[in-house]
Length: 438
Ligand code: HEM
Image 1 (cartoon, helix red, strand yellow):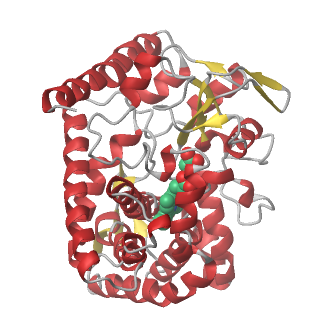
Image 2 (cartoon, rainbow, N blue to C red):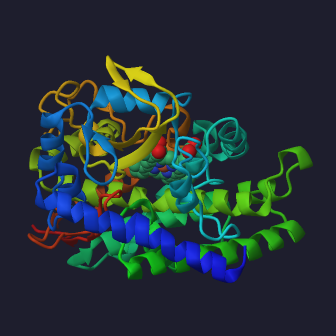
């Protein structure tokens, strides 16, 4: 496609998918529609939970004015995520997407890979998805991750040592942002000294998951994606000449029948890198806030460190780092007695499903004794179930345990938490803590 053609599509996409959606949504938000209020009302990003309850009160699947049908129903979301025969993630290719909209959903520049659209794992259906997933799963199995555990611990201790002698710290900027990016860089074998650059690109690209971006945010997203594409293209050229033992070297130099093309390689690597830290940072940041707020919880965790596993499941449930995902029905289907016609775009509000009172008693409470915390959908379900789930859990458990062991009296400075201004990801931009309030 010609340069002017790409520029035209990029602008058309912004006009319809972002500016149009934003304008229309604001109109519906003023009429009180809860989904649009949740996405666009100031303050809703700090606390979307009352709006999830409004959606729940309106029905199991709620037709929204401007965006999609939305649901916070655990059974429906769980069923939709597990039924990849009826629910697609590939909005840009599906015949159920109206033709004009399909054009808009395809990446504007066919040479620039994104992290959510085909050919990224998150944007492809079987059989393509099955093939990609098989190629990248190996480093994320529990057995492969055993080797990474010591490195996670070393990195966490290094970062905590860097805070010694300090009374206060921004725990997000100085700890929870830095640990996951160092770990995923190591798992993927990309240079650790690129850490700050990866963080900057990851943060600039994170709104790619959201709707209604301003033109400036949209430009920043595209700029960051382009820069990551260029960096990975050069990195792959290097790995072709000097392969290492890492997963990216294996992908680049795979047997011809397994080999991904350049665009597929970049999409895969960028998703692994981005998903590897943009989500886990939020688990750690929210974890600090929730646990520091409850003296009983932290006393129990100090006395019974084996409870950190349960603590992380409760954190994933209560403050889900990924609050939503989307699917499109490609055939008429029925879940738990609810009929869903083909061609229905469905916004699955994971953060709401994880507080569904039909599944979780007292869902708004952090409970170390909850018997079914692990039934949360924070890491999705079905074929797109988070590839990094084992790594995320391990980083969450180790990262938080080591922090609270070093600073058992850590307290959040009241009013200091600033949330990230995002719809899909939930976490802190910054959070000041008093490291030793005693
Ligand atoms: C607390 C941390 C994390 C959370 C909450 C999380 C959440 C999720 C969710 C909800 C999905 C599926 C979205 C959907 O079904 O539409 C997903 C997919 C994915 N995650 Fe994670 N994630 C986390 C950490 C990680 C880490 C550390 C990695 C490391 C590589 C990772 C890699 C991926 C990949 C590659 C996919 C796509 C899987 C596929 O489409 O088959 N995630 N994650």
